[in-house]
Length: 302
Image 1 (cartoon, helix red, strand yellow):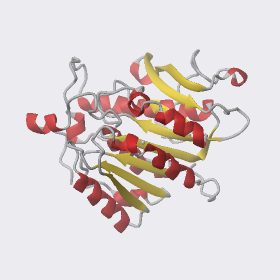
Image 2 (tube, one colour):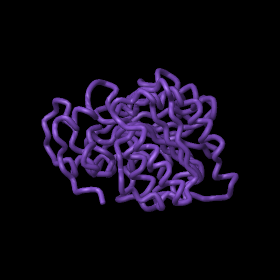
Image 3 (cartoon, helix red, strand yellow):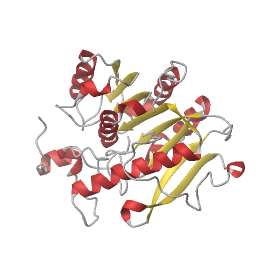
């Protein structure tokens, strides 16, 4: 069993910290009938306040987070140029890594995320994870106890993690409604701490995801792999030059998933680092999502 929350020693924390590349993303798409709490009210800056006037392309938005006393929290959306309100759209939810923001996945990929999403007609949504410092509700010992990047701690790691999870659920519920997302074609990906979030949301709400991809995360030895059986396929990515996360941990998880009957595979990117392996494999990852169309396969996510 994974030990209860504890802070790692300085050497272990340093291994998973340092530099912009740290957990900087490096994959719920929730229609969320089972979302904790009601979805937030439509905000004045909602991209879908008037469907006939929706702006497409790269959108930097905010909403008032009810669980944080109405604090304005950023999120980022990419809408394909041919988006329109009278049809359903597939969506990719992408989770950034430790200390990053909703902008991280877009900035780190250098335009590739928008380009590949446009190619496939994917809506892409990147939540901030509240303050970007917590692991989306997973509460693993290591990612939850990383340094506060110079910010004064005002709450416990568990409290931050709960708010990070709530933020993801809020943003995805909002995006699902705002952009007419097909609940049968919702995909999830993330790098480093984002992988922790992917695995957390995959086990807690597996029916919501058509397929998932994750990369460069810390070990999760007791991860309940059998929970992922409803997901059509799992793609795990790891950099051959990753000096923070171990490829052997990702390989072990892959083998455990396969042994449990989950369709899973691992791709090792020889020149990939902790921060850029997912970027190097991004075209193939979105191809992977595009080939797993749970709408045509008849499986509903809700």
